[in-house]
Amino acid sequence: MLQLRNISKSYNDNNVLRDINLSIEKGEIVSLLGPSGCGKTTLLNVILGLTEVTQGQILYNNREIQRKPMQKRNFNIVFQDFCLFPHLSAYENIVYGLKNIKKRIHDKRVTDLIELLALRPHLNKKVHELSGGQKQRVSIARTIVMEPEILLMDEPLSALDSVIKESIKDMIQRISKTLSLTTIIVTHDPEEALTMADKVVVIENGEVAQFGTPNDILNHPKSEFVERFILKQLKIKRDHIYRLFGDRHGA
Ligand SMILES: Nc1ncnc2c1ncn2[C@@H]1O[C@H](COP(=O)(O)OP(=O)(O)OP(=O)(O)O)[C@@H](O)[C@H]1O
Ligand SMILES: [Mg+2]
Image (cartoon, rainbow, N blue to C red):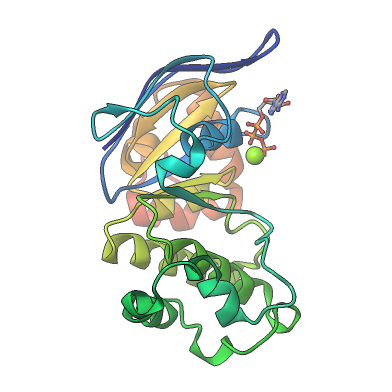
């Protein structure tokens, strides 16, 4: 279990995160949702260990880790722009991180991941021969193959068209549930957050405006901000969402 207790982060006088409290269970998919500049990436980086907290505690399985360096946390991130090695094939990218680890042990895991992400037909392609969705799947495989205890993703779907988005969303859910892998996904899109995550953290100006299930957030928004942000953003997508989660607005 990952717990954030009274986490704050300031850059000079700018309080980017304020008194964040969250509990995330093993195997949960949690979305960090909020408008541009509200602190989503900063919070992700704080969990990853790339950014030091100004105040507060991070506990992982009841141990304090806020001063632990990133490499020792064994959390891993999928970057928004994929960051693949252009001169290597899809397969070489996937197994790159295993170079120094005995390969035999990992064969089955690699094969399973390739199947889960439907990457078999693309393994020999060089990066420039892959589509955006294929690159994203390779970058997810490359991260998961290292067996992170927590998978972090910053806007993993934002560069993809809506059809590919749906299939990658399904794959992320399937992987997270099959491997019982705690997954934290940053997005500014309420539809993505509400349809993908077990729990959603709505962030307003560096603070948690609401932390709850998609159902809670949609049907019991805790503040006007949550209601306005979600409804405004959903726009025409809202009919679809309400069909999935019920409708208190009569839309
Ligand atoms: N290294 C830094 N130094 C100073 N200020 C920073 C730094 N990183 C982030 N900030 C500030 O913190 C605030 C939150 O930034 P952050 O990148 O976390 O937002 P975000 O919610 O991820 O936004 P977006 O949706 O646009 O990616 C912004 O005002 C930003 O200018
Ligand atoms: Mg960001």
